[in-house]
Structure formats: C-alpha cells, structure tokens
Image 1 (tube, helix red, strand yellow):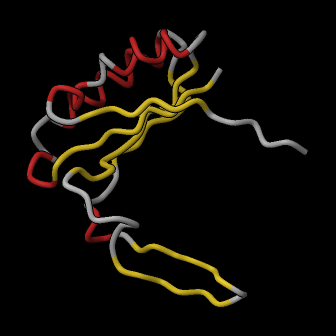
Image 2 (cartoon, rainbow, N blue to C red):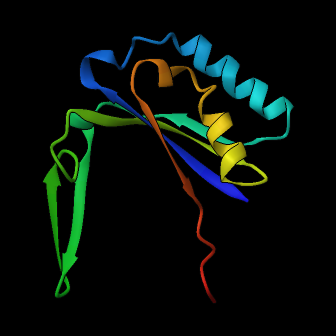
Length: 110
C-alpha cells in the first residue's frame, strides 16, 4: 500500500538538514524498493492557493493556512502497512527537526 510521508518544518529550519542527507535517505529507500517518489518543496511564500466556488476561480498568495510549520517536501513510499510506513517515516532526516505526517493513499473509485 502507498503512504505519503509529508515533511513539515518551521520556516527557519528548512535548511537545517543537508540536502545530501535527504537525497541519500531517498536513494536508500529506492534501493530497498520502498520509494515511489520524493521531492523537496520551495518555501510557502512561493505558493498560491486556488479555490473554485460557483464556477469562479480565486487565487490567494501563500499556503491554505497560517501555521508555524510548513510543508517542506514529501516521500511517497510503498509499505506493507501503517506500522511499516511509520518506521520508514522515522528514518526521514527532517523528522529530527520537524515532523512527518504519514497518510495512506486512497484509491479513487471509478
């Protein structure tokens, strides 16, 4: 089953963990057949939030909500169950400085 590991960090800690360490972590997950995809994200001040209400599109600068921590990146992993996904998330380097939210991917009904 696929799990999305969302990496959250405070803005001033975005570079607290070296990029190389995160890349090495992803490479290790990939070699073990666990990694589907991983990317770092630009800071929230580069974001835009898009809403469509009654056919009208509105765009707001920045993230959906003001929070202390911001979404800094993600790892999409393939794990047996939530327990294994949590164990994988605990090995993601930014977990030392921020938090990792682990969420199962929902298959869309067709």
